[in-house]
Amino acid sequence: MIKIGVLISGRGSNLQAIIDACEKGGIPAKVAVVVCSQPDAYGLERAKKHAIPGVVLDPKKFPDKNTYELEIVKVLRKHEVELVCLAGYMRIVGPVLLEHFRGRMLNIHPALLPSFPGLHAQKQALDHGVKVSGVTVHFVDEGCDTGPIILQKAVPVLEDDTEETLSARILEQEHKLYPEAIKLFAQGKLKIEGRHVRIK
Image (cartoon, rainbow, N blue to C red; front, side, top):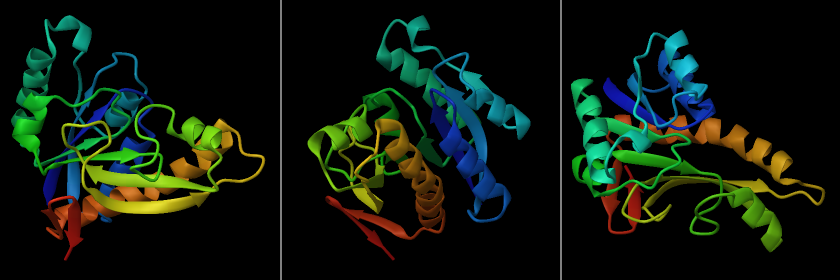
């Protein structure tokens, strides 16, 4: 059973999906710690309800990004974290975190990457007039939503979709796909070969 550290900035609905999957035995893992960049994020309440340590590290209280990320690494190491999952963590990962967890850090994004990276992916999709959007789980690298793709799931865009309705339907799929990808990692079934992730 592997130990997961989850990085959040907000309400933590994907965090909840990961916790639920672990507790039901769907993933051979447990969430060992939640690190949050916002002191008032609801995700911290979710962690508390499941007796998971929640640590607030406000980036504004650190002199620079490297110092901030070194503190995150310290917390993750203290809890013997083997896999880091970004779940609505609204910051670009820097070299310090990457150096310590390269190949052991996952992110989920509400679009079919490489289309519509960054913020407001659902709005980008609607503005672009695509007929299909979706969700991607990928390894984290130096770029913004550019790492090797593990799993993707398509979600049709309906004629009368708004950013809210499309986001809600994509989120439903996020809650299924992220635990699936984490399970593959925990089972040792993922191998990165260049841009490709091979599933054994």
